[in-house]
Length: 230
Image (cartoon, rainbow, N blue to C red; front, side, top):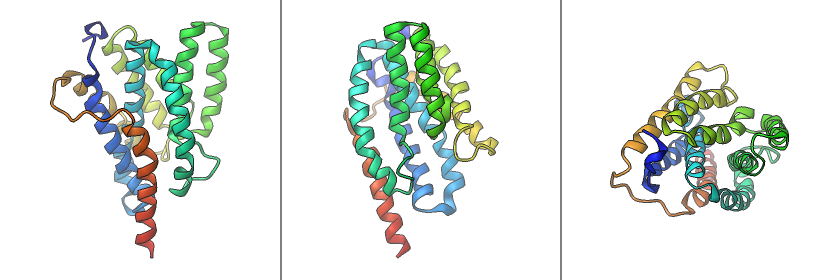
């Protein structure tokens, strides 16, 4: 299996659905029903690696999309920040879109400067800033590292995703929970099935669905949690 086979857009459709659903399940336990936080947290461990894999793989296929991703993610990250706060996070904690944006910016640096001093400096700076993100420095570096692997082969990208997904989840809410780290291995498995089932009849998500869904589902969960506490 290799990206030389030129997978179609549908190659990522299953991964998109799974990433969005598992993210919502994770947030339900954190925002609405803390009694479920342990099982929902485990389910949610595959969401971020899947989102990172989708973006990195698409950029490996279409390097020209990098600037478009930056222009798309940045405004939605800003729009989503109030919803992130309303859902229970601190105002200074960046939502996950900022972490994805940092990864895309590093890909842009790789495309512009290659593996040179400017790229290394930006990588070190963003990785250091990654301590403020949910998935830490490893989360920031996941997209560019998977991107470099995906530029050679899909198989290599999946192997790298397994490693980066586990490292990123070491920085997550329960770093002491080995099950959470192991659960991240579900991401490359879902990614593999997504590639192999590219022809499956799945409803194609609209272009902006995830970016709109992200703040709206946080607001909806916050409202449900508030009503449940009355």
